[in-house]
Length: 191
Image (cartoon, rainbow, N blue to C red):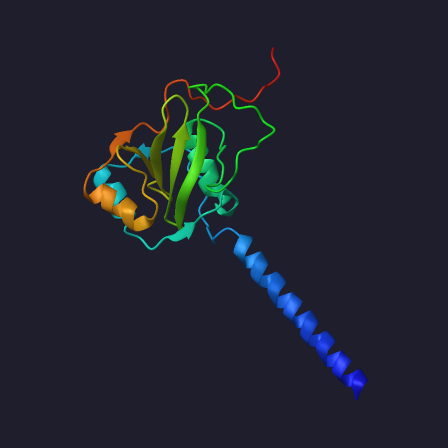
């Protein structure tokens, strides 16, 4: 009888561990997203961006949970490699704080959203000589398009605040790609 209880407890324990592992695995997986990265595109109008943000988005709080196509599209929009940190990532105490270089802004994600397969957005903070809060909105598909804006008074911290900022025009449209932001060109063999 004691042997049977031990076997039952072991089975329950193994099942519990398996379920926990599956749930943890699901928590770190990026949301389902089936679009390819945006490579060439046009700029969305303010109204198109606001309309696109009316979709049902899955909110993303960690950079590692952003689908690869979203990261690649943002890199194309910026004209820079996708280098951004999570909202709660602490500063490295062993790394000296460099003087900010205006050509290499530090970006920290505030939050992002993904609507498979149509759209994505990311609200982020840009550090440098002057901190700013910006958003990039991406429409995927045959009519791929981007829209970038800066927020004058505050960064939206959730989708409702983002939609409200657009509705009340508390933003300034900006170029996604700033002068001097160029993707590194692959090195090929010279002639």
